[in-house]
Image 1 (cartoon, rainbow over the protein chains, first blue to last red):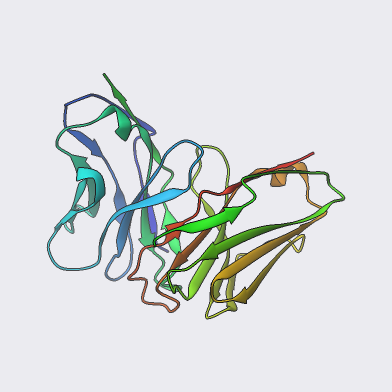
Image 2: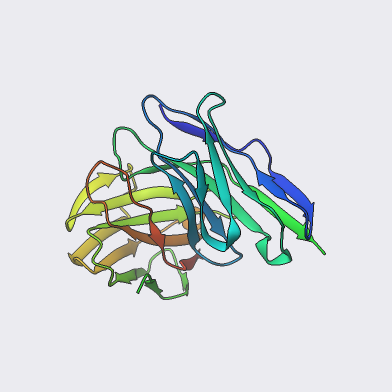
Length: 114
Length: 116
């Protein structure tokens, strides 16, 4: 079965510093990987995805993610964090049996302090 | 327009009430989804509609009844709910009604449901 793991419940970073939110995956076959962000009392917003091609994926709001097949990871990164980046972040992978079904990680709370 | 709208934003209902949640998108997407989300937890898939037909039902209790009247609308009918059904209900849509899984899902802001 497909799964993603987000090993950190919470990540704290100072404004202006680089941030990383970690995600590792376990799938049979080629993974299609997604990152979503959820601000308080809001729905999820799509940030970026990896389907195939370049291992470095650029997305919305200055975020990027690196697909690493050997480490089965898809970590979300941003060079310089903003206080407004504080939110709940979810990594997700396509279900191999039902392609339009997503399997979500548990989520990571990102807190950026000024 | 990449917006998914949901009404109402908040809903309080008793365990004997009947109510409906509504979702609308005008992106031409042919897959629509209902999720349930508890605080600080990932969304849990409830139902998927592909080309207006129910394609996935994640063993959801029958007190939740989905309906897809047309390609732009998705309803969730609620009846005889329990307090543990209180949650944020999210609607989403995507371009991908099939099994490829290539396309991202666009989420609405959700309906905050409280069952008393």
